[in-house]
Length: 131
Image (spheres, rainbow, N blue to C red):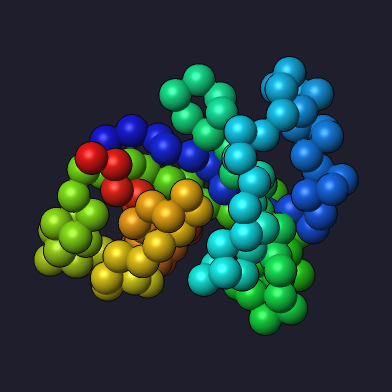
């Protein structure tokens, strides 16, 4: 297992991407809209991990609610696992509350699932499958 990326909720990619370009010395390696998550995503490579800037695309998105409640900042931490379905089964059997009981597609068309923060010390954890 390794840290895959940190998701950062932002109000505007247009305003935030240039700041991270200056901070990291290069632009995003990819940008896309993830319809299922109602988010526009800019991905920066940082060593073996990534930073994902997440801008909501809908007033009904969970990111919009997050920004209204907490403001801009770290939204989630993502851990890479080899077998997502197995990891979800093991975690649920161990008493971890899941947001997603079945994998779904996230940024980069990767299989992902979220764990409920009430089971993970208040941190929203995303698992991503990397074989």
